[in-house]
Image 1 (cartoon, rainbow, N blue to C red):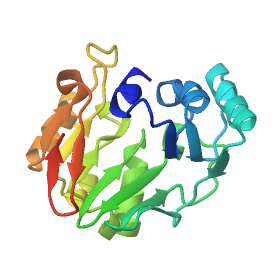
Image 2 (cartoon, rainbow, N blue to C red):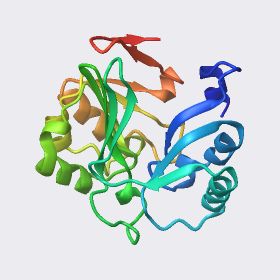
Image 3 (cartoon, one colour):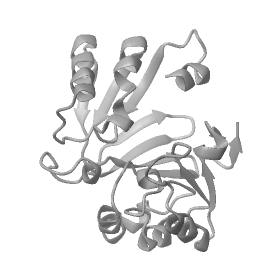
Image 4 (cartoon, rainbow, N blue to C red):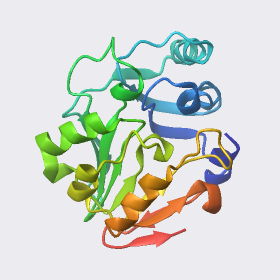
Length: 218
């Protein structure tokens, strides 16, 4: 929440779209407060069982605020900006996932800004990655990969990296976390495919911008 308030000016109290990739506490823990403090126009999430204190707090806040909330499904396209033809395409889930494990039901989506692109992967395991590569390799090819599951060894398969061909891989993981994320075999695999790696463990909050042709560090 602190990072969000630093990124948005104090006068800006609105957010166009919030996507909860899946209802694990480390992915939605701050969202009830975000909904309470900001006017969120659209809230998206996968349809998967969630019965935790933080999930209930999130659903209560959505109801109290009257926020438009929808379960996502493959093929949905969110138009974000006309000038640069900015879109977010939902690639997964492509089927009912209500009884799935939460990580496997993670929302996977492709952000397209002009000629530039980025793949968001939630905590999706390699089985889901490999399914998408086989089903839709053309939409997996991006400039930047947000590495799945904080760099866990359960994700970021060779087939994904071969299809995605990212120039940059971003890892979101806490310093000294008890899981050892990112796993050394994952960072080694990414490096073998020629991508640079930036982790929040060393870079902290990392911001990028693009004019639709080139990426820039903010």
